Amino acid sequence: MPEKGDRPLNQPLVGLVMGSQSDWETMQGASEILDRFSIPHECRVVSAHRTPLDMVDYARGVKGRGLRVIIAGAGGAAHLPGMIASLTPLPVLGVPVATPHLGGLDSLYSIVQMPKGIPVATFAIGKSGAVNAGLFAASMLALGDDDLLRKVEAYREELVEQVHQMTLPRP
Ligand code: RP5
Image 1 (tube, rainbow, N blue to C red):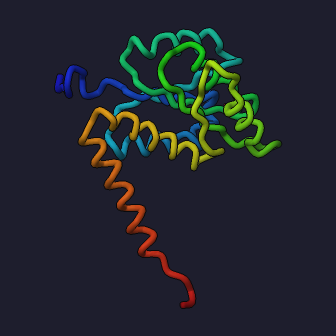
Image 2 (image 1 turned 90 degrees about the vertical axis):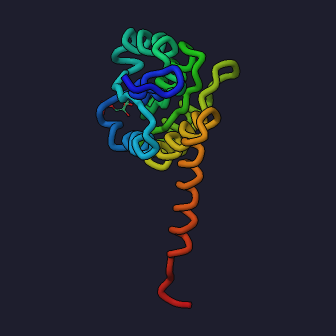
């Protein structure tokens, strides 16, 4: 099997987990970014309240399987990111998924208001948060990977070019 350093190339580095299939529409924003940077990742549905034992098994296993970062998205009483963070020393990036009744403020507050001791890095509500969590994971992994760092820099240069190409209907 081809390898990079001491790990197989297809070994997932990021675990992308979400509380429901319905979160995928939002969370795929993170997966697309990770794909763009060729960062191997796995995508799982793990519900903190519907499949708590699966969640415990998953969170306890990620470090031993060689993952480096977890991105966890959930909506409503969104305890998934915090619970996973309580079960693993790996960094957990939390994405609040928008909800029909409270617009995702419920998800945001649930994720961002972690009591001291168990941190969850919390991103914006919805797709922007998912995309930025993917980008943040890429930057974290790039700390030890110069090729990946160059890809992150190239992405930023694309953003600059996009803004330079923007036009308005009047001078
Ligand atoms: C949460 O409940 C999930 O993260 C999802 O955002 C929300 C709704 O889940 P479904 O009813 O769509 O399965 O656990």
